[in-house]
Every structure is written in structure tokens, then in C-alpha cells.
Amino acid sequence: MSSRALPKPSKRIATLVKMMESLPETLQDRVVQHLREYILKSNNQQLSECLIYAN
Image (tube, rainbow, N blue to C red; front, side, top):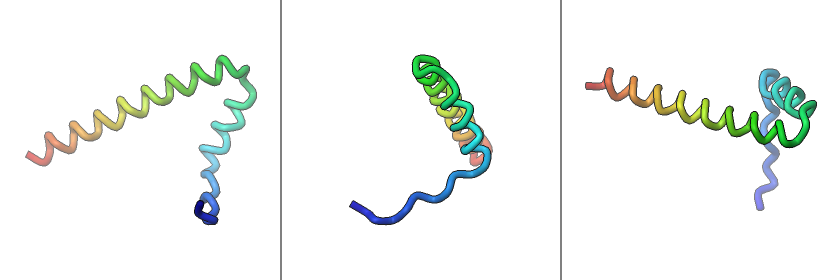
């Protein structure tokens, strides 16, 4: 196991964590799922744009 410490999260991430922690656990799960889907969709969209402009 690595003894390397994790980098300090950005202020944006720290704010998001505080907001999430204020929610009930069931709602936290829903928000995580929505964020996961949003991030995957955004990443796929960026990849598609890169492939379009590369050709």
C-alpha cells in the first residue's frame, strides 16, 4: 500500500462534498448516479468532438 497522501481537493470539490454531506444518504446515492452519468456523457461528447476535429 502506498504511503503517498492524496492531493488536497479543489475548493469546488470541497464545496460539492459539503453539499452532498448535508443530504440524506439515499439522496446522496441519487446525486452520485446523476453526476456519474453527466460526467460520462460529457467525456464521451468531448471525445467525439476531438475525433471529428482530428479528421
